[in-house]
Image (cartoon, rainbow, N blue to C red; front, side, top):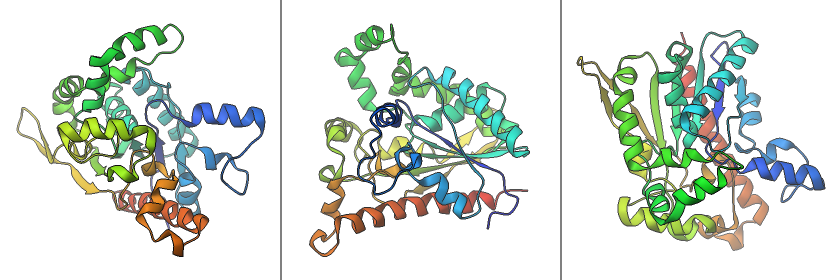
Amino acid sequence: MAGNTYPIVLAHGIARFDFLTNVFLRRINLILWDRSFGNDRLHYFRRIAPYLRAHDFEVYTTSVRFAADVAVRARDLRLEVERVLEESGHEKVHIIGHSMGGLDARAMIVDEGMADRVASMTSIGTPHLGTTFADWGLAHGGDAIVKAVSLALDISGFANLTLMAMAAFNERARNAEATNGVIYQTYAASQALDLVFGPIQPSWKIIHEQEGANDGLVSVQSQRWAATLASDGGVVKRIRQRDFPVAADHLNQVGWWDLRELRRARWWRVSLWREKEMFETAVKNAYLHIAQDVSRLDV
């Protein structure tokens, strides 16, 4: 049981896919794949929040700009965290950020004066060192696409994910992150190419050629960030680096299963539905373990 631990805040990544999905499904009143209705089954963090609540954790989901610059998304996240603090009556939160959600949280802590309001920040699949896929995209016309689309939708956040952009941010944030009271930990995951969700297999290949093992969008090395942070004044902080307990691509990490996962099992012995439920439960248990772990940090 969680007792009086700080609330868990889930921070989503860039271009959250459930935004368009929810709009579409609300309009046609259709739920695909699942047997029962329920918006959380289509949430970015699929069925994770209610699973944690069922284990007595106080959990909040958040919403920030779709694909805006990380500075904008960090301000959005600050407002969301302040809302959680007001609603819950607590003085701090634990943040679990997936993908760019981890960068939003880091920027919020450093640039939005929230270090004293965050007990811990756990990232999953976050490109702390950037991703070569962002560099590749910008080198192959992505910058022109960003400019064109920005007339209708701000997607400038993709430029924050290059290796150079993240190197600059990491250096700028180093002193603050090394000396603040926030506990940082990272979870890294990867998956073999034949199990990766089809649309991100091309990016898996691009990243693999330059950075090795990856989840289809972010390399394991980038997800791990660094073993320690050291300030100019000699303060050294350890980053708790962990492996995600499930072999997972970038979407699997937030509870989404696809048919390619059957290749990992003896599918002729397991029903399609049963295999899906087993995989999703394993992912939800990974989040439960994180919640239990950070709750022990509370004072």
